[in-house]
Image 1 (cartoon, helix red, strand yellow):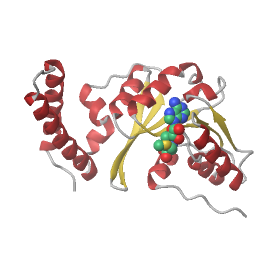
Image 2 (cartoon, rainbow, N blue to C red; image 1 turned 90 degrees about the vertical axis):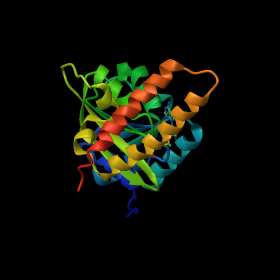
Image 3 (tube, helix red, strand yellow; image 1 turned 60 degrees about the horizontal axis):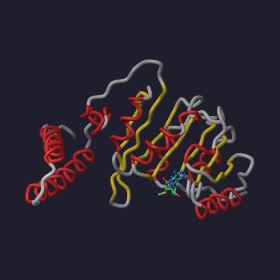
Image 4 (tube, rainbow, N blue to C red; image 1 turned 180 degrees about the vertical axis):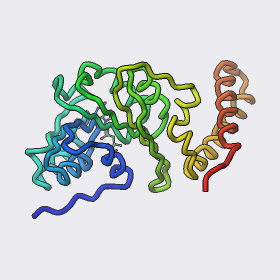
Length: 236
Ligand SMILES: C[S@@+](CC[C@H](N)C(=O)[O-])C[C@H]1O[C@@H](n2cnc3c(N)ncnc32)[C@H](O)[C@@H]1O
């Protein structure tokens, strides 16, 4: 009997959004821990682990071999969703990258998404890029999670395809429509720290010789939103 795969809390939470019997791609899979964990725990699931770099691809292959999952998980080398055939998967996971990279992977792989009704994204930064892509492509944000691991706060954003238009305000795109209604302790911790960072950036910009007034106004507007959101502390 092979050993059980242990996942970090972050990846466990990402995996929890996949339905039973998922047929999915994990793009930027690195060691392929997530697809191997899912397939080890659900023999009706199948996965493609996509990797753009050769080193992580061979780590993925090693994990697949070690846990004897070659009939369930296939590692493929390539950029983003280009590793997929059309109509091959129903769900896509993209975790552990910046939001702008996740957005461009989704944008460049539109033809591979026609059969996909669920995208689970875990951007490390710039989450609003992912929410904006979801909105523009009729993926409704079904759930969001904020969690802390090893001193870093992560967000998970889950988009479900719908056949109607979605609108999110700029504030919802920044803070997350679900996270904004929950506003838990971690949410406040994250945005307190973002507020400090933004104040420093604004001060530097104001003291600079040449000022980018447009950017400065955008940052000041964002600071206003953050302060507004932080005003009503209502978690228990
Ligand atoms: C920090 S790791 C995240 C691994 C895992 N998904 C996780 O969340 O722990 C990011 C991985 O994405 C891969 N990657 C970056 N850009 C990619 C792209 N355009 N297509 C596929 N993989 C990519 C990198 O090679 C790296 O292995």
